[in-house]
Length: 246
Image (cartoon, rainbow, N blue to C red; front, top):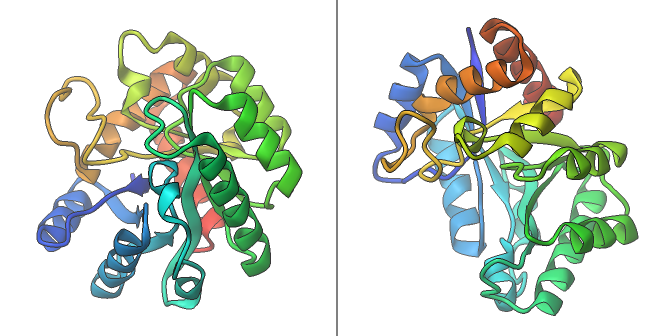
């Protein structure tokens, strides 16, 4: 089985080791995600250092108060596969909702201008996320990363043509809504991620996460969907290749 970690945050100093461990676990490709200007530049550097890594460039809602300076200039760099992660997060409100919405809207426009996929982060902000997305127009390739909603939010995202990416949360005992969303997701809209170093799946909760743990997320996703693990691996591989044009 071959896997693609659709969303993770790699450490520069441990890059070679982490990529090698992931490869040993069948995780042959990873998408290293930028959350501000510095991490976006670093993601590009890591992608240049490993032929198994691709970068995204974007500003996370927590960092929206700092604006977008320098981000768009990075989109022409080699091995940049998407815009994001971007979106809305009202759980902590490290940036004001107004700043988050403005920076999210600007990145939607960037994805359209550069014909790149859009990686969305939405937490406790579903209505506003969908409103900003509808106003800007949903890019042809859009993914809700680390999907935390239930069936209603899943249908709203899917109705807009988006993909859903599931993390280790799908393995958490309390995550029945997320598993219900995973069950109804069409096979051609399904992606899988670790969001490492966060959200280690059961039975590794409380430990730092790593792309090598992606097959454990896949196992939980397969159980939620009532299908074979091999089917989840193949489907999510094919979907990620097409989505990011790897």
